[in-house]
Length: 74
Image (cartoon, rainbow, N blue to C red; front, side, top):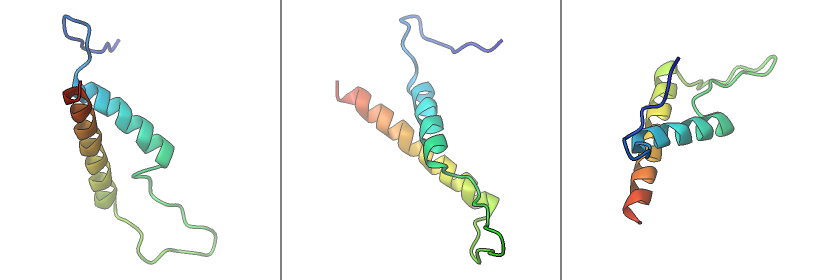
């Protein structure tokens, strides 16, 4: 059974919070998912899996930056 690793004070790490934010945004906005072409239509510039991976990594980096910035504003 997996359990979140928390510090002794019960606070979550920025990386964990950023990962939760990343999951929410990626799921809600369908970021990184390949587009499914409609019947009879094939997009000429379909993104490769490397492009999707890059999008996801950039999104996580933005989430981590946002979470880290929020903590510094306290």
